[in-house]
Length: 458
Ligand code: C2O
Ligand code: CU
Image 1: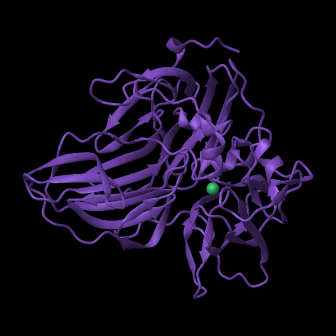
Image 2: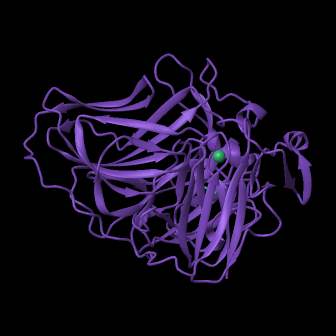
Image 3: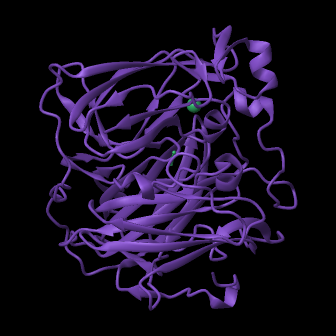
């Protein structure tokens, strides 16, 4: 065991033309990411720095990843005064690397460390975040992006990561310490007052007709992000890391918590114009970032072709598949009167006292028994129904699912999906990754307040 000292940590990073900066491994093959309390200039202008929890003193943490087919080795070092753990969201990792304390690993105590060794099976945009007391730890900044490059990446002039977050700040730009209050937990979660986008690397300038790849990641604990892009035209090429078989013309982009979308767009604004990214809700809009456009020499280009598919099995049919109902209940203005918590049937009032106000199939909190036990290779259909007054961002660990569309076809591979109030939709996946896996709402307030379950594959 080595001592934890920030100066010992290798913060290597280098710039590749047009590609996000990626952290480099140490001589022993590991990239160290240290979770520490630190200060960052989150709000521009005359504001003090914000005290955050970040990996390697930055929020977002260092960009991780590599080329598809490589391995990524990351050593998590805990410089906090409480336990932590890192989950690799959307990455089809071995169960022991999934980063769920109490289920796939022991929590990493203060001064402790854990070594993750991950095969980069799938190209695309993923992210990592704390999975211990995650509402508070992710709110404070313990997350970063993972970019796995295709072996032959598409031809673009800039490959940019756009990390979206929603902070609840005091007038002094400090994170408010009101985590887990019952109003947030039982309604739409911890919604902030400062929506922020970090673009990496920040291009100095854009030119007319340049082609950009933008990798959007919504790291907010609870905020759904409707986004507008101006000054560009193009295609959605991947969702939740996974390439779309046929790129879609870009429309309004809405990302639920933890969702990602990759777009490839051409700058259509002319010289003197601008490319602009805005958050938009109803009539309200805030510009998150804007780039002036200079004259360029690029000629307009052909339509984008699909990214190469990842080595993930496509569902061919759900005939004979096992259907598992997942009924979401609870929360404010919902109809739930009682639920089981820790094996005991309780009235809503008792559930509120325990901070457990959301249930899946009538069970609040993580049940002792799995929701189902799949045989390896079995096809599972999760029939999800949102019987609450709020939207939920349902996430399955370890495997991507495909929506079973009303016409019988299958949607793109996803790892997180927004279900609006009253919706009932079915999602199928092949249970090909052995282990214990979580299913939960990625509105981390809802997850904290009970909306989670698990299953096994063996
Ligand atoms: Cu992004 Cu269970 O997590
Ligand atoms: Cu939810």
